[in-house]
Length: 443
Image 1 (cartoon, one colour):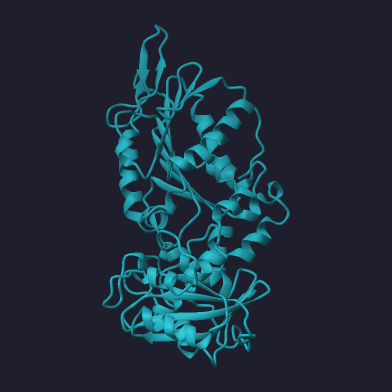
Image 2 (cartoon, helix red, strand yellow; image 1 turned 135 degrees about the vertical axis):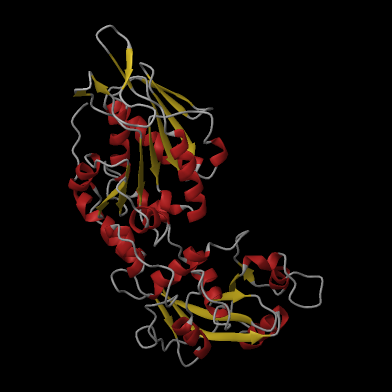
């Protein structure tokens, strides 16, 4: 194999003598390189099939396959791709079988010698567990050597034990192995499997983004720190398992550091995050100051959407209204009418900004926290505490429940939810955009 320059964590991982090795790493730390080099090393055996998995088929097409192709061409390894079956056929008979974790029904009907799973922590833990179990079941292809007479001799027996030649000489064994590569997403599947329940068969290497800094754009690490809240920056830069679902939902909100004295100036545009709830309808009214968002007014405990609309029109009759509502309003009616909540907002002549579905809760919370305080401890979301006392209380007091989701039992969720819809739409975190900035080898 042509020589490839590796980082220290990549070298440690490639030499990790475990049946189930994990490369747990920050963004841009070289996960894809570690995965691809591992696959190429496995292809040095003859007559083997290698499994390669990603969270979705889109990621297989956009990231995994192009990266494998780059390395195969760089190593002058002849190959062809069967696009309909998602198989890369290597000249000489080896194969790379590509499958998606989100379609476990396709993880059937084949055997592989070794497997490699990318970003396993980005899917729900139950789904990751199911996929892991199915992948292990596929990982049973035997590797043979030839004796002097040309007969195939297996290196391991049916129980997986090394076979002895003449009861004296032990053949070198080449075990089936399943490797995983991921950025940690809190105490999710990777933590549960390798740390909490890990056995002698499991081992992992941590790699920080800093270990691969020489292969990254100059502003890459700075961009991560500016984009993510401190807790996620720790996970996404250092590959650390960080608790993201306990304690305060907005741990870095500070009524003094995030306080604002801003108010509405004349007929300037307003940006309103809106949550629909009968008797607890809530909206937070914001203005933009440069790149910063300031909450300057609030509506809490409105009886229904009609009341929220009436209050907004009464307070701000001449201001352009940009409203960012709960996407479920397209099918909900909060009062005794035939119109849905979203239809009422359109009828009020507001500029309505909404997707077909709400963002994932963890993404919405991460977006808010990144504006409240990022990894550089810069703040870009502010609240006029005097004008928005309820929103301030909610951001200070809302906690996670026993299931690891923001608690809804005490009605502290409505105003922050609206803020989340607004921030996620106006200034979302784009993981793929950040990842794509790592344009050089070492992605």
